[in-house]
Image (cartoon, rainbow, N blue to C red; front, side, top):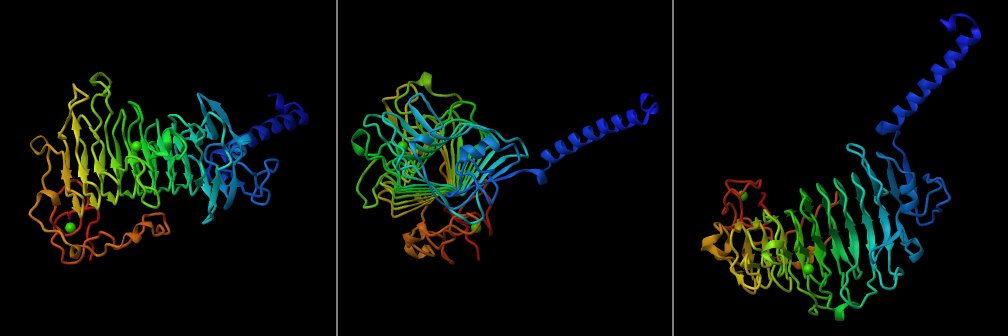
Length: 457
Ligand code: CA
Ligand code: CA
């Protein structure tokens, strides 16, 4: 009733109401997608700038300080020379250079995206902290989406047992899309922890640690999944790994299962001159080295590798790596590996005793021109119906639309998909078409085909 006593009071209360309304409006603006902020960084930026398109920031860490859930950081193209003074934190012998530790929210991820079709390249070749491992990007935040970033030149400074990493994930619900990890001494992508992460259409190539342990490069994989129990529902999709000094994909020592689908892995274990380096598997899809039975997680993770391509790797195209249980290999194509499929297992109780692999499901896989096609599979203890290596089919070059390996490194499609090339696709008229059985993977025609690519008219 006070508002009715004087004009002044009415005016005062109206001002209160207006302020409250304004605050409400501001809050509404902040949560609405249209109100999400856009922040720019650029090679010629300055962290003292406001981060607008006209006055961009210089660093991702400065951008992270400004972002809120739902915001987008646009990364302009060009070279970003990284320096040791930029190391965000040093912890447990690791130098985390770019540390993304702020989270988005459901429906409101924080995006760190290359601007339009520009190509930002973060060059870590000058970051050589003595005695420290280098983790170029460490991501502990969740609900993040990184897209279109290239990392190159990541260093190893330690000469004993060690490893460096281009992108390390420890968060949940993150998307890593169209990242390139190349020409360094570090592992490309390391999924060390976290659930529901998607690694999509990323490339890891020409990574070789020539510094540690005699320079064999035995730890440098293109993509690694080594997450503990509780890290579920992670997927590698559309990723490509080549000329990494160890393996293309490596899932050793993981507490949960991971899926690799529509991925290509080739020439791993070699230098670009095909000098022999590390292990060289295309897909090393399991294993716990010589860990005792008590250290093997239960249930034993059952990784899924499907619609993948392995070509010309130094060792096996698809490898069970002494896994003490079954794995799913569905609709894969292996060409010129040594061998194409190696299902080697181990005795669960006796880690020193290798046995033929057991419990595996192999369906609609296709091998051609392997040093050998299939080794170390306990067929009685596995389900391996409907694969080229245990069929009566005769496979020749005429079964394929193309065998030109130069196709493997063609540029990706505009949307980021792997290049659509004839290599190892089936030729019209091949008797491998419709020769498979339903393995829960979509197919065209009367039945699934053998191999990674379903024939389309
Ligand atoms: Ca490896
Ligand atoms: Ca078919």
